[in-house]
Structure formats: C-alpha cells, structure tokens
Length: 333
Ligand code: UT7
Image 1: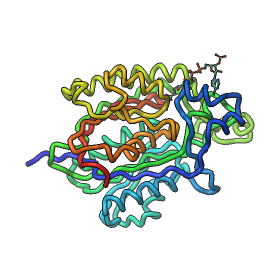
Image 2 (image 1 turned 180 degrees about the horizontal axis):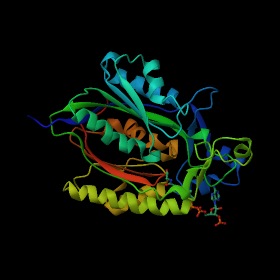
Image 3 (image 1 turned 90 degrees about the vertical axis):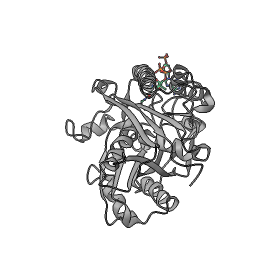
Image 4 (image 1 turned 135 degrees about the vertical axis):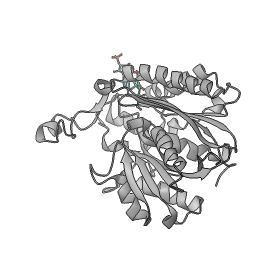
C-alpha cells in the first residue's frame, strides 16, 4: 500500500480592519515608533475592537474563506481543530462555535492550547489524523485576540501583540509532498517567565485579581528572547539536517512573528538570505497562534509545488519546534 501523507491544499485568513499604529501606542504608554521599530519591528497591528466579538469570529472568517478557495462542501469536513490561547469562553471550545457558524454537520471539533506554538503543533496533529486514513478533510485554524489580554498600560508588552487568524485545509496524498517531518518540544520550565497570573483554576477571578491587574500577559521579555533565539535556531537546524536539506534546498523559512530580531537571528543561524524568510510582523505584530498561517496567507502567491518550507515557533510553556513542509500547489488558490 502507498504511504499516505497529509498535504496543505489551501489557506484562508482574516485580520480585523482596525489598525493600531505605533503613534497611537505612544499616546497610551511612554514609548516611540522608533523604539518599537528597532527593538521589535512592529509598525502597526490589527485589533478586533467591535463589542461582543471574540477569537471565533476571526477563525470563522478565515475558515469560510478557506472553504470558498478550496471549493469545499461544508458537509465533507471531518474535523476542525483551533489553536488559541484566547478562546471565546473557557468552555465550550472555540472550534465547536465554528461548527455551528460554518454549518459543518459532519465534523467533530476541539481546541488546542500551546500558546504561540499552537499552530505548529496543530500541523503535526492534524496531519496525523489524515495519515490514519480515517479522515479526508481536516481544517486547522490558528487565531488569537491578543488585545483581550494585553495590558495597554504596560509598555513592555502592549506594542508587541495584535489580533488575527488563518486556516489550512489538510487532505490525504500519496505524492511526495505535504507535512514531511516535525520536531516538537515542551519543557514546562517557562511558566515563571510568560503567563497570565489569574483566571485559571489555581487563581480564579475575584475582585482581588481584577484590582491587581492579574488578567493580563506577564512576560520577562529578555529571558524569553534568549530562549526563543537559541531554541528556534537549534531545532530548525536539526530538522533540516535530519531531512538532508542544505541551505540551498530550503525555499522558505516561516518563523513565528514575535520579534524581528529573533527572526533575523534564526535566519542568520540557518544561513538563509532574508528574501527566503517570510516576515509580516511589521503589519500584524505577534498574533500568537495566528502568525504562521497568516504568513502563508500573505505569501501564498510566491509558493510553488515542491518548495521546501521550514516552519518554526517558540512560546509560553516553554513550547517550541519546527515542521518541514513540501508545498503542494503553485501560487494562489
Ligand atoms: O511569542 C511568545 C514569545 N515571546 C517572545 O519571543 C518575546 C521575546 N522578547 C522580546 O521580544 C523582547 O525582550 C521585548 C520586545 C519584550 C523587550 O525588548 P528588549 O530589548 O529585550 O528590552 P528590555 O526588556 O531588555 O528593556 C530594555 C529597556 C528597559 O529600560 P531600562 O531598564 O534599560 O532603563 C525597558 O524599560 O527598554 C525599556 N522598554 C521600553 N522603552 C521604550 C521596554 N519597553 C519599552 C518600550 N518603549 N515600549
């Protein structure tokens, strides 16, 4: 029997219309466009600022575009998995809301929480459902409304993040394309450096937690930066070596968009020129689980069948890893 693999057959994306510029951020906290551009590389980010809308709204828009572009009948979708740290509710899952809003009658659905590595893990998890032979159409979505947990009085975090979502369709193939290999890690040692202090089962919401601003992102940026650079670089190099990919064989690196200096350091370590690195951090900031698929959404036109792509990410936990994809179609769908 021929070996079954999972191939990406389309991408859909969505970013909210509202643009939050560095100049506006500089009115909220003591910072400047120059500091944010040189230390982070973000010029503007999109914010979902309409009342009553959460992450599922952006994921639904992205998945709807995906269904249209791939000409998929909603009845044929077997599974939807959403990677997010900012679900609409603690429960039910954001993915379950998508099933209703998209009219998916034959799909089951659940969320995955792996912070900024959510979509990276999802590529491998979704691919394994396809490889089992039991599922034919799997939608994986990465999306976050980071503005819902950003403290806009904290200059160390508020310039970094933005809102957005994007989705891939995974389908079976026996061709030599698709999700070829993955190296994924979690060590649990990152908790003190990147977390939200309250709102979970250890410290449920109370007047105290609200009064003490404990429902926002807490980050020790310098420590996270250091681990992000070394871990993303090491794992990308290991994955390339394991698959006998020389720097010439790699057509694209798709790094998590957390900081342009981290992206540059990873590209430098991989000895890959900047024109082979997907970067859109200047327009969207860090959308957490949204960054990797949003890069493909932006760069889809440039991709060719057979291109070798290395995705890499790092996030809270710590979580990190790299996924090797052989792209499955030419240009835009
Ligand atoms: O996606 C999940 C993973 N997350 C990441 O990968 C994020 C990793 N970390 C980073 O990207 C960076 O560490 C930050 C962007 C968060 C911070 O940049 P940094 O160059 O590491 O700055 P720092 O925290 O070392 O602070 C340097 C200085 C400090 O001032 P002093 O103490 O030297 O006087 C900060 O108070 O920069 C100051 N600072 C700012 N100044 C102007 C911090 N934020 C700002 C700001 N504007 N927005």
